[in-house]
Length: 284
Ligand code: GLU
Image (cartoon, rainbow, N blue to C red; front, side, top):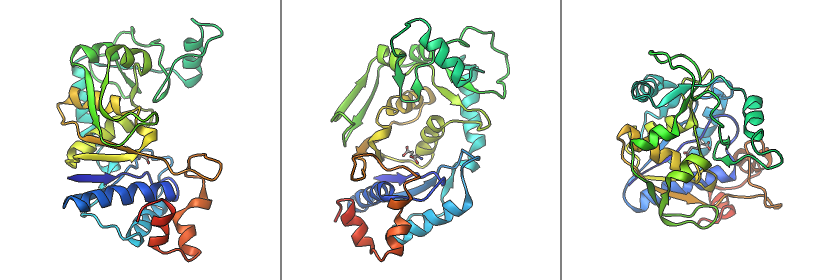
């Protein structure tokens, strides 16, 4: 068993991160497997070395260990590029210059008064740029996956859920063609100024690190169908997934990076031990 914790160094780790990292590490240890760390720093405008240093420090303090060197997404741009080139050559990607506002307008227009469908990445893209002429060489622009074409190349999308989705989904998950097209649509695989996207990077990195069990928060359950589709398109193995409950504050709101009040470093400064943190997130 190989598990991983994949934080973005864009703020302090909070109790939700502690839960995710401890769970992934505990599961690997119990199975005699390996727990890996990956730094998801593709968003260069928000990633900071100080946050990365704090991540290492907090995780070591919690008692976690992982093989070095740690995989950093910022070192992986050539691998992302190579995968994109193969998808481009198969005609599965197209450039999209739409801004958020354009998408909202185009998506709202046909059904005045009704809410446009929302998928894992927000409003399902109405396809405005899909029919435009594609250059032969892959352009240095935001790129979307053509979901109709992608589904011509694969069978049904399915994965094994060992934990549970937000509505208690567990066991074999089968996502049908219509759900992929209507509920997810043409997702962005290359973001502006990033050269990649979370979805593409996470899929390639989980494969490069031979991750067998992806353990992460329920907020990413819906995105898993995208990840499995990309694995199929790129000929990569599909790991097992274990989505876990989210740690919430007293008001029931899930913790965010800006919740400094729940930062691990704050509890440390106030005298918590690693065992106290485990107790706070319901692990022993
Ligand atoms: N980097 C993501 C985050 O900070 C986690 C990605 C994943 O576990 O797939 O939420």
